[in-house]
Length: 228
Image (spheres, rainbow, N blue to C red):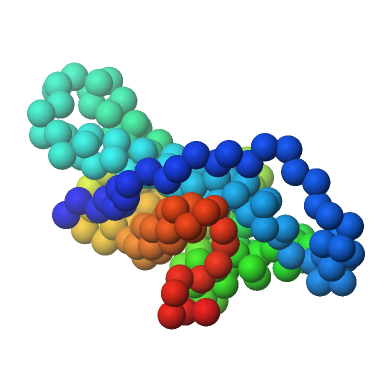
């Protein structure tokens, strides 16, 4: 089954230009930090960048998987195709992690927390969102360190760098996948950790639509009508 993000009509241009906050607004921000309205456009554009990259990888992964049966029989070409698909899933995970940081920042300062709270409210993102799960986000942010630990723990058994197919059946000799995608469970695996992709794709598609709405409503971060 193909998963794809919807493609709404493109939003109008930014047209923001050079902006200086009036003194009274600057004083108000000091009392209760929040995003100054003309600056909301930059947060919307930054999050849309993550989602456009994610969407591009999803389209490419779907295209490659739809044609997997037509690939040449040469081992090196087949392996290159598998690696390319996994590259797309890894980028999806990385962009979802980047989007998560806008919603739940790593640093818990008042400025960052207020910004994140305002964005979550505008996009109707709850604490039940799959993007709040820090496990996948930490894996993407600290992949180099996780790779150090993964390799230092010692790996015995069958080692497969890249794999796409159904979930493996357990054998007496363990099998280790550096990266894998299991199409029966829609899970992406990296360094021995598995993550369901469908909930992430569903949530990012919903947020994508919300951001397009905000962009089309003057690049303002406010909840949809009826949800305020």
